[in-house]
Image (cartoon, rainbow, N blue to C red):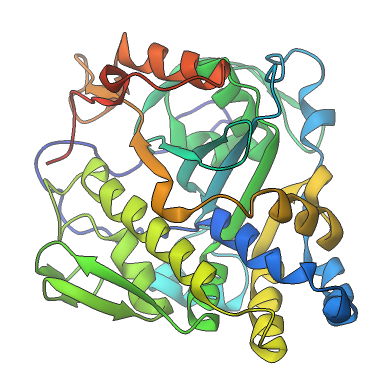
Length: 359
């Protein structure tokens, strides 16, 4: 397959697909950032200094150059939070039956907008099956990949890498991405286990033989393996499409953030170290955040963000007229949404409504 061919992915149709061997996992790196608030304890800093080398960095600014949207006119920040389902490494390869799957794909993508004042945040999920125009990008080896129209969003990561995902998001939205955060498959599981599990209110009974998830409706405390299955399930919720599970992913994000905020991390150095270790080993960031000190400083600036006030939105999409198994950004809603984020303004209610819901 050439670099500019579209990687096949799960369908966004309104009919459930047959079970596939390809597995997917949610990696919520915003939770990782908040976990790193523990590094603000000066008397504990010596414990965390050795974690600095765990964090992997990507020089996004160098890869993208100067042809980028302008930064916000305020002190607001935009983060691209990405989850990759790489099967590299022992634990990653075994999770979710991934032994037969090679390479890596972008599983989950959220543009997290933190307005001036840092008192609230908005997370915009981009469905993985959204058809987008991929701009011309440069790979890590220096080779150039030509731009192409109507490629699936999740294929960009696999074909060209994280810097091209950032460039694609910037081109489709006009929003400047200030920081990039990514966590891998095993890292998500380990993070949930390190904080002792996460309680979610399961909206309906789930019996998903594909992911191996079997839950009854109501409050349930999930460990790392169950959490991974919960945010991956498609066949157990909604219409079986990728759109149907986005609601579960967003719900879990809120529950994870609330759990992290509720724990006395500074009061338990041993537990705090365990959480920080699992987080940093799984984390990849832009080079500006690729150190424990930088992450801790950024996390401190987000300390006023209350998960209860954080708004989650799915990018408004509509079923594609040519291929109804895919979706495209719905206009004018998507344009209104991105405009509000670019201007650090209140998002209009109409801009939050998606014609395709996956219900």
